[in-house]
Image (cartoon, rainbow, N blue to C red; front, top):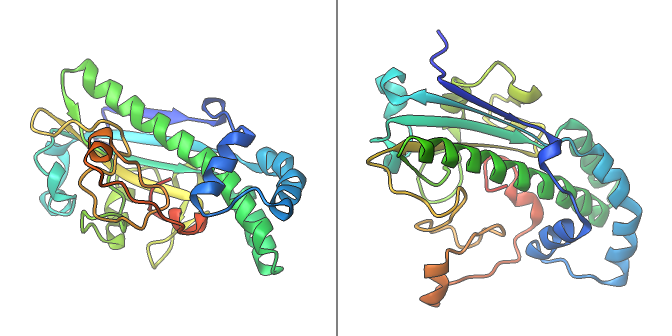
Length: 248
């Protein structure tokens, strides 16, 4: 039986895929505007933008309707939540296949640029989805946690818990398949859960990295308080590492 009490669906109309947004994604992956990268970027940007199909889906379920075994397998900081928002977003199959084609041809710079176009759109749709959930919680006088993704961050929520999250989403949500090894196809997809309730610590941002020890993440979001303490970190981790359960 479907226990969902609220559903959110977003599409590409919620994404503004500007060149600056893509360059910012490339920069976080360690790329600079060298002549070779700029030339390839200009050749790929319009096509990549056309192939990008960012979409997002979230379902909110009362935790009282989540079986005990599943409740025990959500991240510890949100086990006292009143509601769980099960979320998934994707850049779509077309741009995923384009990046893979370049990679298989040994065109690694081209592949990484297409990846960055996909990830820029994926990041925006994920942020928007998280903010929709934050607003739903605020309208009811409740707090919302940061997002937790299976296999990412310091929550010790292993990748195998993808199957928990997928149980509360439609079959093949947004056309995304879960493999036997708990990876998603298309690979430029991200899944996460947000806890909602009076006992939940309110996050400053749906993808805040406050409290997360994964300092090597290219998409680390540094809260203002952390920057004031002088604890910010930088990374040149590849853009590709952000897909499959990690921060969009």
